[in-house]
Amino acid sequence: MIERYTRNEIKTIWDDYNRYSIWLDIELAAAEAMEKFKIIPKGIVKKIKSKAKINPKRIIQIESKVKHDIIAFLTSITEKSGKEARYLHKGMTSSDVLDTCFNLQLKQSGEILLKDINELLQSIKKQALKHKYTLCIGRSHGIHAEPITFGLKMLSFYQEFLRNKKRLENSIEEISTCAISGAVGTFANIDPRVEYYVAKKLKLKIEPVSTQVIPRDRHAQYFSTLGIIASSIERFAIEIRHLQRTEVNEVAEFFGKKQKGSSAMPHKKNPILSENLTGLARLIRSTVVPALENVALWHERDISHSAVERNIGPDATIALDFALSRLTNVVKSLNVYPKNMKKNLNITNGIFFSQRVLLELTAYGFTREESYKIVQKNALQAWKENSSFYKKIVADKKITNKIPVNKIRKLFDFSYHTKKINIIFKRSLKK
Image (tube, rainbow, N blue to C red):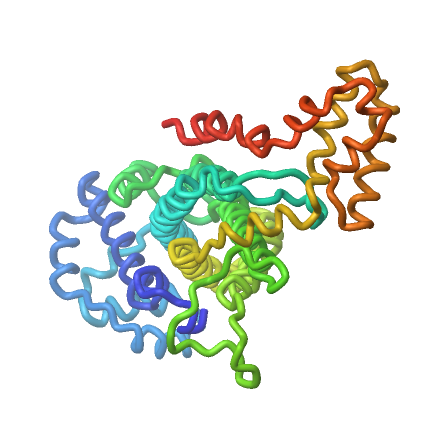
């Protein structure tokens, strides 16, 4: 990812120095195990540790000649550590190091993303509770439906990101495996106890059957989860963008005193952060299909997945980290306009009470079909004429001949639509 969309904590996970450092940790952990099980002489690891230095430029220089990153890395370590380094990588294959490292980087990145989600959840929860009973119109197909509250809107996002948190936790668990099994995964040249030792030291699990690579269905799940989280971000961003439209104006992104909205039109305040989040979501989701296609490798391994993962690993996690942080800030500083919400509630002159009138008519003996026809006729006339739906209803003799006007009036009560809000909040926020 470019610097514009990169935060430092997650960036360091993917830089060359950290990757090579993890490679060295894996090699040294394997050597420690071999010392423990008397496969190599005692004291080797201590000597290598005292001399080994990570030199990314030197590794890249060697790789330009040998065309193999692990060999270049081992050569560089040997140059500093001397003859003891010959015991590194004993019985191992490149994928043991590369795959274990990649999984560890994904795990580390996932843990940062979990922190991001927790911060976002707190921001959403705060807005949800603040606007628990702030009335606004609910929309289906973009059209006014029935009243809800803005807090309930926020609560739906809160629940969605709780699910995303669980998905991510499961995917981190799925990806947290280690393979130190040698060529084609048979342990022919390495003791399985070494793998157990390395996995424990790196706080990973062993890969039960690794062929020569860790199975890529694990990675497919991980990147699919990132894609789902990105889609949730986009759903939230689109809601803000729609509600910020001039003719709606129910919420708006924070706009700084010195901020400029347009190079040409000084009056503009655009939802640029939410639009940016929509774009980032597209980018993150674009990594899902390549991850799925990486599952189908030839036989025990090939490297068709390699170039893909070198790109989507950092790109997807870095972009999602940035997007989650940006969304958290948008939610925290969101301007909410209850007066405009009330204004928009009233522009249809109460036709959203149509369902309640319909149900009341059926309670007084009308068939559902008769009720629907009567209510729809009055609602559409009120909408067309920009007149009161209530007045249309009380003027309809078919209705008032059966239902007293004082009972009809009670049907047009906003509290009817909010009476169960507290129940939804209680079951959504229970621990």
